[in-house]
Image 1 (spheres, helix red, strand yellow):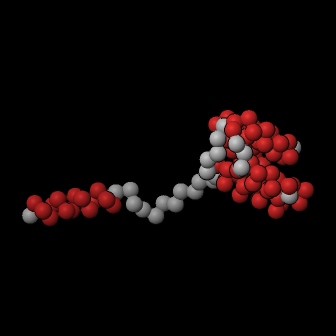
Image 2 (image 1 turned 120 degrees about the vertical axis):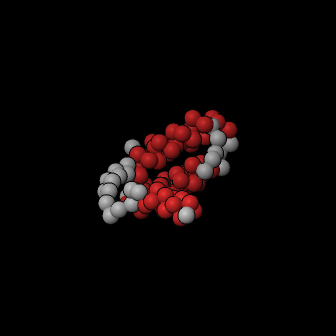
Image 3 (image 1 turned 180 degrees about the vertical axis):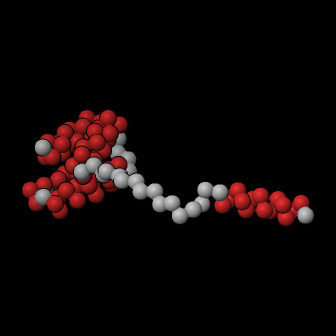
Length: 101
C-alpha cells in the first residue's frame, strides 16, 4: 500500500505543471554584422584564437552572401585564423572591422 501511495505521489509530482499552455517567446536575433563585430572584438581582446574564429567565418559567409561587395570579408576572416600573436590578431581584426563599415 505504501509503495502505491509513494508511486502516486511521484507521478503526481511529475505531472504538476504539465498542460497545454503554449508560451510564445519572441527572440530578436541581432544582424550578422553586429554579431561579427562583437566576436571580432572578443578575439582581439583575448589576443588568441579560439572557436570564435569559426563562428566569425560563418558570419562572414552569411554577410557576403547577402552583400556581394563584402566578398573580401570571407578571405580576410580565413587569414585571421593564421594570425600569430596579439598584435597581429588585433591588426587583422581592425582590418576586418573597417571592411564592415
